[in-house]
Image (tube, rainbow over all chains, first blue to last red; front, side):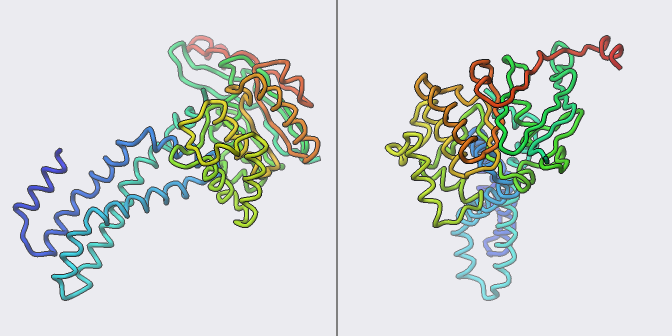
Length: 128
Length: 231
């Protein structure tokens, strides 16, 4: 609710110009992605356990979540990105925030997974 | 002869309410040679699954070392160990990915194991047929019984054609007929394909089917008093 409220506030009080709006909106990406990842911990843990058992490495698992988070963030912001694309004359002004969005989404979506994998209780899940 | 797995004086400790739980008080030292079939026998809570995790690099011992083909891998990950010995693991708890079908799970495992794409379909077909899973290959694991999910894990492990198969209590969720089939299957795999097998079990009858056995001892609890005496 806090994230939605923050985003709504930004949409209301933020300047209408593309650049500032997108930069301000980027602030909601880290907590939203982290919460999205944490809220599905049970499912993600099963996925991580399976991937390890199948011979996957920590890096492969983290990359999987990184790209998932990055894509989620890009899709969520696609209307604003599209609006910016139509409004901007300099493509560079659009590319930089989109790259930041991509990395922020990926990083904050994969961080909870990294924490789970590294915890000492993780492998206890393999035992009955 | 260079052993596939060698553990030397491995000890694991966990904090617990009664003090520090120490598994393998005297340390576990064992050797598994190429083509061997070793059964680790022990009661519930004696550290069988922990030993599997230690062998696979998922848990680190507080004392002792683990070697794969004479390389000290005590601090190395499962993936690094797989690089030295092609290993497949079947854990006590079924691990199939819930959002993928049985067949897709096996595809993913084979792709992570680096099996060429053109070989995968054939291997999956063989493994599914062998474990009687061919009729449910398009089902999702969550809709299946515990025994069926255990068989998915076994099919996944064997489809990889590993050099070393590590199995934690293989017949845990299987019914009587599947249990009776599994141990001869493992023996056949060991004898005919030369697969090295490291298995844990709580059943002496099952352990007796293996070429060699290691018996674990019950764990001990270290309190501040007896730890000082021990030290």
